[in-house]
Image 1 (cartoon, rainbow, N blue to C red):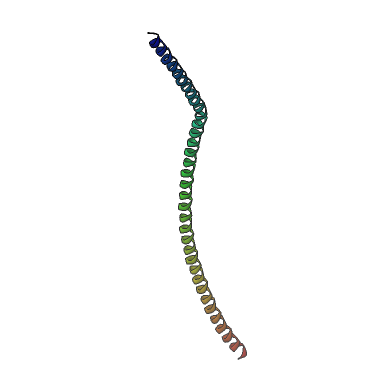
Image 2 (cartoon, one colour):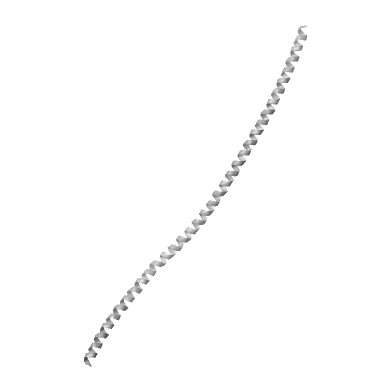
Length: 127
C-alpha cells in the first residue's frame, strides 16, 4: 500500500508539474496573442485607411478620365468649327475677290470708255 501511495504521489507530482508547464505555456500563448492583437489593430486601421484612400484616388481618376473625354470632345468640336470657319472664310474671300475682280473689270471698262471719249474729244478739239 505504501508503494502504491508513493507511486500515486510520484504520478501526482509529475501531473502537477506537467499541468504547471501546460498552464504556463497557455498563458504565454495568450500573452503573445494579446500582443499580436495590439499590433494587428493599428495595422487593420492603416489598411482600412489605405483602402479608403485608394477608393478616393479611384474616384479622382474616374473624374479625371471623364474630364479628359470632355476636353477631347470639346477639342474635336473646336477643330470642326475652325475647319468650317476656315472654309467659310475662304468662300467669303473668294467671293470678295470675285467681286473685286468684277469691280476692277467694270472700272477698266469705264476707263476704256473714258479713254475713247477723251480721244474723240481731243480729235474734235484738233479739228
